[in-house]
Length: 592
Image (cartoon, rainbow, N blue to C red; front, side):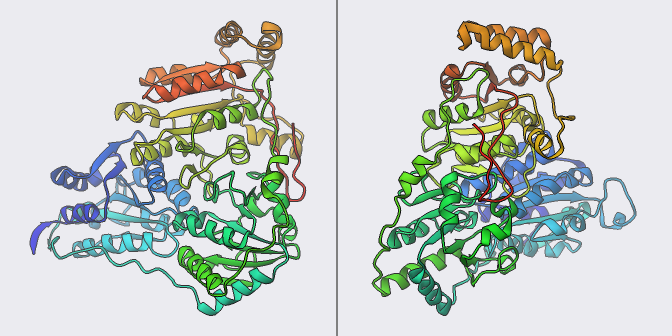
């Protein structure tokens, strides 16, 4: 046993649990933790410009590497700025540890300076929250936190640390302490046999790959089951990347926004759905009556609270996804099952129903941007995106091949998540090219993250889909409220915007040449159209360029990818392109 401060013990536990990075901001209420980090010297720290960016960086780091992300903040407003990030991690099942400073114990509940009961505030959006008032409990709480974050359905934990508790000395022996065992829930063999019976007797079964399959590292087993039985696969949006987009059995994504036409059609024609690690959330199901139809459901989820929450399954299996899929594979092998006769050519349906992307329009159609993205970047690229039309187009059009190469916040959808998450992802995977696909409004939410990337020399590409609108809300206003109110974010008048777009179309007979692009850019500069993402990037020490010609997108992407610095590609798009969506999966309104 050795005598040391509680934070010295805590940092040694973090190290033994595999923590290599912490994202945060030091403040008076958390400095003993930072002193321990400095003294041990093995865990790297990135100082951010806002606590929300810090927690999103930790989130992106965790998603990219299948590990625990860690962030730290001081007391009061520093701690409360973590709330959105904790909510995001909770709904998307991301293991994330938030460490917050707190005023001394004697000042709790006295409305002291920067003393807020953060453990109570975040209780609804974490797996567990602690405010440690007994110094001797620090080692146990930190160990238990890692077990809670990783076991069952993953999720975030917050540990609040009063300043005097951080300074106390305790007896702790790092040589004999070790991580707690993580238990994985085995499926009930009788349920496995029943699931096999239902799959084998179904006329038109389909397998639904949810985000939980990726979290459980069970994509290989999921695909093996599909191939063994020759059953079509659809995914939820959070399941995107769990199976290669061009796999012969991959029909596409199901949903009322982030969908593919082929995914919705194959799902609607099914009679039985085996859903693994799916939440059946509203953006996926749409109208529940349409979604459920007359089909039967087998639902596999490690969280018992998910079974029957949105869809009452005909068979619910509460167990680890990987263990359940392996058990199903073993059961099929034991029965010497032969694949279903091939009834439909999934690849042909997928190809036939693919949405159009090869537009030559000026201003640029957003669909054309994704054509260039798909053709330029390879399967090793890690993409990050966030809420808005940019996310919906990305979900509908991007072609992803490998798990954890498409990171998205699907449940909470906080604007600004993607830029700091991209930095976290690049820190986690320095061998990968990381590309953030963001809207012009979302960029401006957590743009404080860009100078952090420059400071720590973290290169990544930011593709801005710039239409000068709150695009998703503009479309909702147009079709639901018959208005266009407070959603334009370009500074100048509508007349000036229209004049610029007319000039762009007129350049080179409708096709914007490089000279035409420069002319359009000059018009924009003279009119003061809106936020200049390129100048902002340059002000931060990054690089960037504006693109107005669809035929120049690819060259810009290459310059960005080759730059080895944070690089912004600002793509000026058609302002009012509508995105395919609907209220039910059988009535998606398509736009061309």
